[in-house]
Length: 200
Image (cartoon, rainbow, N blue to C red; front, side, top):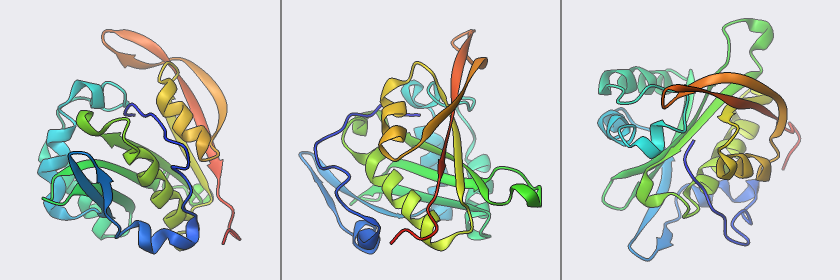
């Protein structure tokens, strides 16, 4: 997970404003961005973003994934097996993404989705993560059958944990030594959020 900081009122938009949130440009001193669904042409950008140590080191993924891996994931988006939202600057540069996918092929677990989020270093701490999470949670609540969202995050990643808590994720377990990072085993937290089917 990427590093995050928060500004007061950052989560003020509610689910009813999702349509606006996905098309509105967000101001920033040195640029702006908008949220949109991921596209097949984003594969190279995703691979490049995962080459930053401050990005991949805070995920449970290996560094430097190939564009081919992202092409497969983006094909899953096109086929409806994965939901992926990106934050892109006006020039088209992808600065962050979040996604959700079915945790298991077991039909008894079909209501559960795993999620992940990454932000490029220059945009970490600028509210991009909050905007992406808000859009993802709202889309999953209103347009997909998922009811339980789950994730694993390094236990020392306080900014990411704070982001998840802001959206109602609760800690379920501390998993000792689950993640391997920088040559050592690190604890991770398992967190989950139960989506309210009747949210409006």
